[in-house]
Length: 224
Image 1: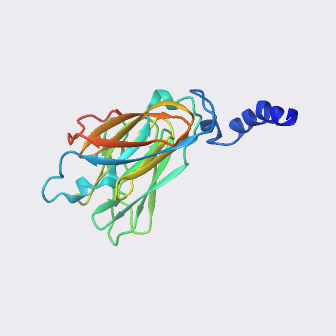
Image 2 (image 1 turned 120 degrees about the vertical axis):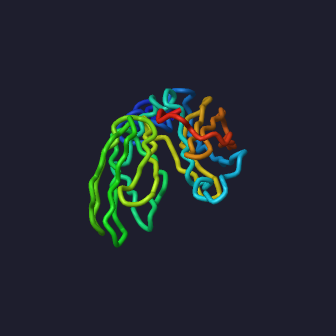
Image 3 (image 1 turned 90 degrees about the vertical axis):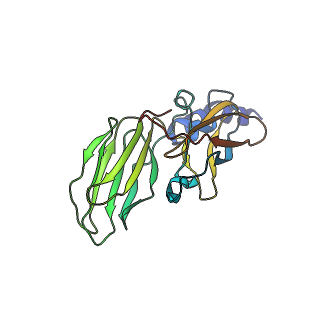
């Protein structure tokens, strides 16, 4: 028992500093073992006629409130891939942490370019050929709208100030965490449906949450 107390008191805090993501399991809000938040996203308004892509549930990005996540010590993945193919970006929406790199790859038979006039991140890759790529670093939080210089492809990079986020699946399901015990605010963003948020209480059981969008397209590039 004495050895177990020593391990709990000294070894676990050291692991939390040494292993990315470990600090999130032993967080500051309530301590205890972490739980994964699972949930679904839906919208109260149908997509516009002829714009099925605008109503895709997998375009929803779910993330923890920025102020709450600042103490969790999560580290971002270094690179995220976005592919230009068939007059579209795939995936259409990606989420990255501040400071992360997005690698834009051309998988088409034509030349493409990727640019943005967003105040969050203005850039222009210029034309690049098939099987080539251009890396871009995103160093400010917010919503960056992507365009192609030769066709009408539109995409989005959601830049989050931490790394506690998830992209919804085709059926609208997602998982977030693990998060320590406590009360947390979960937020979501969608390019056509707007924003949503919900409060979850993490205790002895893993919580579930339903995020319902109001159907109003966001009018700002700031991260809600």
